[in-house]
Image 1 (cartoon, helix red, strand yellow):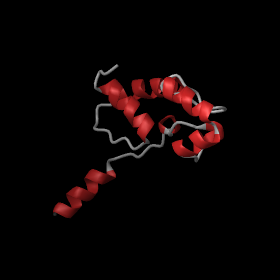
Image 2 (cartoon, rainbow, N blue to C red; image 1 turned 120 degrees about the vertical axis):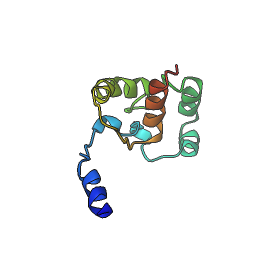
Image 3 (spheres, rainbow, N blue to C red; image 1 turned 90 degrees about the vertical axis):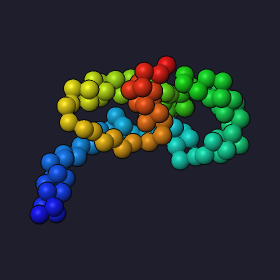
Length: 104
């Protein structure tokens, strides 16, 4: 019946884990809130505020680093012909969305 059809639809999905979709790595500030960073290191918070896309966390990543690690994955995903469901984190999803929507 209907339950069998639904079960087979889900069975066809092949879950994959891509480390490229991991959240931005904040290096020395991993696990800290923006408020924590501002309190601990006001200079770092100012640098990030001035250049959010280019700012690299100490011993961490920048948005440009995310772009570099997403590039090969995006090319792979674009070659798929079946529907995709991506589960990731805010910074990564924001970058993917902008790319897929043709936004700068």
